[in-house]
Amino acid sequence: MVLAQLGGSISRALAQMSNATVIDEKVLNDCLNEISRALLQADVQFKMVRDMQANIKRIVNLEALAAGTNKRRIMQQAVFTELCNMLDPGKPSFTPKKGKPSVVMFVGLQGSGKTTTCTKYAYYHQRKGFKPALVCADTFRAGAFDQLKQNATKAKIPFYGSYMESDPVKIAVEGVERFKKENCDLIIVDTSGRHKQEAALFEEMRQVSEATKPDLVIFVMDSSIGQAAFDQAQAFKQSVSVGAVIITKMDGHAKGGGALSAVAATKSPVIFIGTGEHIDEFEVFDVKPFVSRLLGMGDWSGFMDKIHEVVPTDQQPELLQKLSEGSFTLRLMYEQFQNILKMGPIGQVFSMLPGFSAELMPKGHEKESQAKIKRYMTMMDSMTDAELDSTNPKLMTESRITRIARGSGRPVRDVMDMLEEYKRLAKIWGKMKGLKIPKKGEMSALSRNMNV
Ligand code: GDP
Image (cartoon, rainbow, N blue to C red; front, side, top):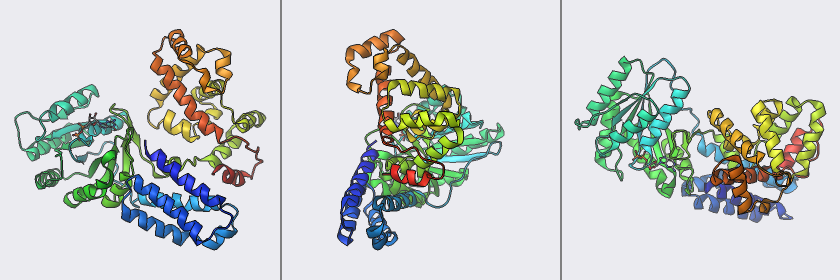
């Protein structure tokens, strides 16, 4: 995800500022210009960037910056708040309730991932105990019904559509009626998309919306559309009352800044993001953890509090010692996996680390995450002690990787995946290096140190 580069650029701009001996108007402006450039490069709309710059200038008091010891933190906090504000329209979206029929209509351009996302959304709620159903009101694209049918069948979700009927409104109404009678509590209507915004598309959408009276209209947007995001989202919002946004293809090379623009244009929150073609590559979107991750902040203070809260006192020094050494070996990863699987207290602690929770164990996918962890452990069982205890990734040559794959009966790709995971966690872990073991009550001082 290219958004990670945005986080990197912002962090660099903040570092440059905090290295300056005197903080004056010029240094502050240089820093803000750097940050603005990074946001524009990530396809955030120009007007939003300009507003953000003005807001930060208002929040950040130059005198406090000049005197304050931790300028970077003050600025980082201001950037954090502003990015959160951009992504948070201030009102939550409608959420379906179990047992009470809700109609959710999906809109978006063709190719945005709308049909795929309808099924992901249905599947997500099915696993939460809902009784979802899918209605294909896309009569424009040949094959749309087949695609929905195929996806729905795989996920065992009832569906409705027609090869003969060309009136989307009629299909939508029939489908909704039918599933209401069948006591489905989440009826999802997939509407037509077009290659570009056209009057016919919007008129059709409006009619389907009028006829089915959806409780929620979700606008689906491909994360790679760039600067066009704002206008596109606004055009949809003007035709139907969009109440939430889902951004797809966040796994690709998209710059992702368009997500911020879509929120601004529709005044609706992003509720999920699509992170792959597969039905479960779908994540709930939470603003604060997302921005934290973007800025590489992580919830260090919460993490340390948790250590004191749940790790038995006699185990704390050893764990903190390992953290402070900052050397993350595969063996340490193995031990943490064991903890996570046991879901013992330390498991809870590690699930608070941004790396462990968001990437390795996404919410709602606990079962798959556990299976993945077990697979990783099987592969690590085929490693030598030297490999497990090394912190040098270069040790893992092609022949070693092949040997581990053969030994564990897994494809080479899986071993590579596991090593990637290791590298990612080692990077996060590396930030703990030099950690002073804090006493109770010293958490905020610690989090200040970690937050750089
Ligand atoms: P629609 O025309 O808007 O209904 O789009 P589709 O649902 O047919 O999706 C278009 C293409 O995007 C398909 O090849 C999907 O598999 C793919 N796609 C959808 N969502 C994602 C996603 O989150 N990540 C990736 N990598 N591909 C996606």
